[in-house]
Amino acid sequence: MGVNLKGIMPSREIELTDLTGKKVAIDAYNILYQFLSIIRDRVTGEPLKDRQGNITSHLSGVLYRTSSLMEVGIKPTYVFDGEPPEFKIKTVEARKEMREEAKRKWEEAVKRGEEAKKYAQAAAKLTGEMIEDAKKLLDAMGVPWAQAPSEGEAQCAHMCKEKAVDYCGSQDYDSLLFSSPKLVRNLSITGKRKVPNKEVYVEIKPEVIELEKALKDIGVNQKQLIIIGLLIGTDYAPGVKGIGPKTALKLVKEHKTLKKILEKVEWQSEVDPEEIYNFFLKPPVADKYKIEWKQPDADKLIEFMVEEHDFSKERVEKVIEKLQAAFTAGRQVSLKGFLEK
Image 1: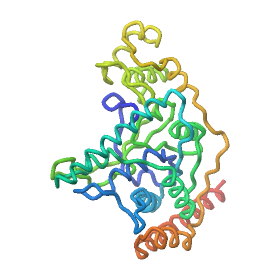
Image 2: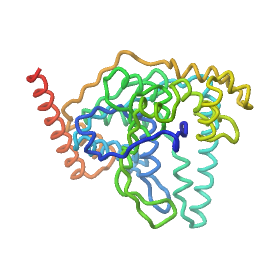
Image 3: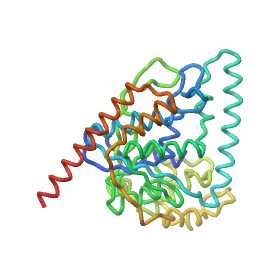
Image 4: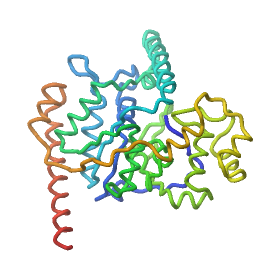
């Protein structure tokens, strides 16, 4: 779920084409969960499945959305989570319980003939097999991916700080607490989207947050932004009861440091706030990673998506054409830049 900085972090809407030529490190778990949540039957909430009963919603999202991003000249790199910090274990267990409860409500709603999608979305589970299939698909597409030693968003932020990529891509704001210079949201949901429980559609555009400018605008520094996150609640602790983004910002401006703020609020989590604070400041990241876009392997894509997972051959072939065109265009741009140096 991540930290909720909505309402206090200034952002600006852009067009997807404004990211043409830009490299984006995408938080893989974040976007895969989005695909598992969104790509479902509108009534029953059932995800896409192949003939063997394997869930393929995440593969559909990776294939079609990634190729659409590349079609406009965006260069995505997926970053996968490693081992979570020890103090996140309770959060992981709590989420598992929530998914199981949502699954129960989903099954009951289906039996009653009621719309069950909202429960199905909450029950979405990303398995190890799904993750490996996503990596296999990316390899066949020629799209690079990196393995983080710990949190994917920390690795994305590290790559962005090193200028290996231009943006972190995620719906969550956590990469900002990990000091990513730039965050782009809404990559997976750009376009017309239905408002939940209403027959109303809205246009969603990519949203960019530039960390240095945002911090200056709201009048805090990076360490204080982390404190705001702690007060609101993160993946590691629920935060302080009754404190939202605006109240947290006010407290940080008044009291400045974590030590002074903890004297003013009641921290109820068993997790030491200083441990979380220090984790955001210095998370485990990999310094060695390879970002290279390759020619898509048409045969592997057909075998994996069509023969193994029952996707339409015609649609997959159209994606292959997009990927080949994007790869060729990217090479031409790189060659032109090299010759101009």
